[in-house]
Amino acid sequence: MRIAIDCIPLLLRSAGVKTYVYNWFLSLRRVGGADSIIGWPWLQPPERYSHETSVLSRSATLIRLAWLHALNYSGLPLADWVGPRVDVFHASQQLSNPPRRCRLTATLYDMTCWLVPETHTAANVRGARLFAERVMCRASGLIAISHNSRSDAVRILGLNPDKIEVIYPGVAEAFFEAASRRPQGKPYILFVGTIEPRKNVDRLLDAYQQMLPSLRAEFDLVVAGPAGWGSPETLARLRAAADGVRYLGYVPEEQMPALVAGASVFVYPSLYEGFGLPVAQAMAAGVPIVTSNVSSLPEVAGDAALLVDPQSPSEIRAAVEKILLSPDLAARLSAAGRLRARQYRWEHCARRSLEFFRRLV
Image (cartoon, rainbow, N blue to C red; front, side, top):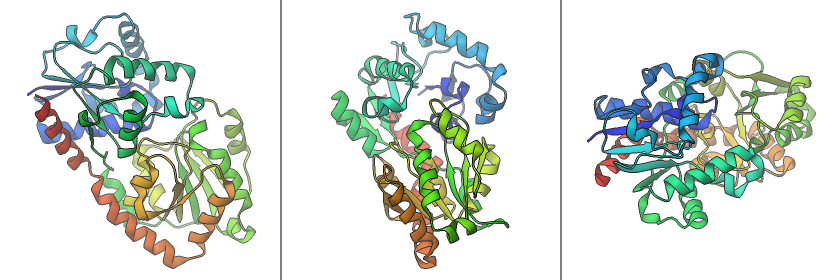
């Protein structure tokens, strides 16, 4: 059995999908063998396409990406003509004309372009709906990254639930290893994510400003993540922030486990997530969590987080204060998170994915 994984997301600046594809693909190759798992469109060895490649060295990939997009919208099933024959082709959200000579599968990340379209660009919404029509509705099978995403897709697109398998993503081992490390310096509350409307950073800033003055004096709010789209006012607030707010911008991947593990509380008030990888990473690092009571986040966090209404800064504030003022609660959430995070391992994800592909073939 030979499987081609569409690796076009590795050329992009996006965080969540790219992190998923990069780690999933390399794990599939480790478990299934490099001869059986190949990357499409075979631009370079996949190990070259870490997140830093597109964030810090964009010029190395822009020409290839432009070429692929031009062919993608030409109407031709590009993957049938470029590269070796395969038994299964696993499509990404960027491919609108998938191959027709093999089994077609895809990853179902989320339905945000239908449920909260205002948190995406118009181009992203059009692309997602085209992908649903040409790929998800035609695919022999789909991998959903959460039960919530599966349920949303069945309800919104009318997909057959029997062809959708839920396989959770993994967390890099470095986050598990970082759990025992606590850096020196002023303690902090942490948010990690792209600065864009869906991540709800403005309400997090409001919540921090509402906190008890004594807690704000003791704990900084650290925000880490690259600038996204549609958030100039949020970025202006972050860059002008004082009184305990620190905006780090993009943080290299190798520094992220230590940053997460050093937090006193991890806050992730997203308006909608297909999975919520930063929450799983914080659990692996043993950090108590405050996150939203919507979409997949309760499913992922389980009993390892305090759940809040993401539309309510006062609820976010109260939950953060509750953890900071209760060492026993913080310890309980930390232990529950480390235990729960064990189910989010890339090797387990890869093995279940290979079983999924074998059943289709």
